[in-house]
Image (cartoon, rainbow, N blue to C red; front, top):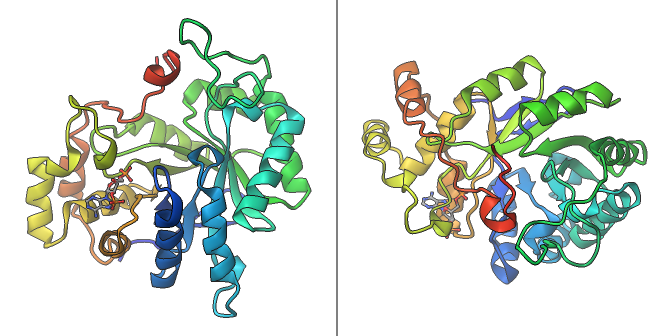
Length: 308
Ligand code: A2P
């Protein structure tokens, strides 16, 4: 049986499996979150840019209106968008998320990307050549505001997403509260072994997104992780599904994981991925599938070669 929670560097626990909500819209996400919480998910991963926090808020209102569900038994994450990195915008943005989600506090609030866009109504402000319009807000200012959210009691833990080694090292030179989590793309085609080792040394927990290889958002030339023959063979051996093997592999490596689904059967399948242990050889076989392939790369959206 694998770990059902991981300890963060501030004493809080993060459940090892969470529900991802990127690309889950409208009543689908509302129903999925309610069903997920009913069957035992205790970690829901949100973000303002996903455009669905109001619908998720309806689900939370229903969930927490019954005495059976106590807010402090759940772990809820959200993320600060790139055009809200200025101090006052961080505070405003977090309060808006709390109001949309119908919550009084977040368990975890993350800086979504290590890049600041010019503030305004446009979430992805581009210049005439299609390049993102970068704001001069230093990450020091943004992190000060994140720390203020903790002081105000609006957020229990703060962290980052999509930070590489340089961004983490820079943050560690000036933070008063160290980041608890870095949420990054993780799966056997993008194993990020060195970054994981380094973060473990720094006592920063990793949450892996796109653990199934984003099968619903594939480009024509993308590899299909769930169809990988090595993965399929391992799944047959354990009498599990490929998705369950991927989730188990990631937790075995010490990361929490947030597969997205709006389908009841797949929500159940993904949650029931902890009741077996992969052998060390099978973990290595999956890790050896690495091809440094990213399913999520903002160079196509903002012409920012973010991962170079
Ligand atoms: P759906 O929401 O219809 O279940 P990732 O978390 O890697 O981004 O993957 C999310 C995608 O994977 C969604 O398109 C989701 O579709 C699909 N998915 C979720 N769980 C499973 C599963 N157990 N098997 C196959 N596909 C899944």
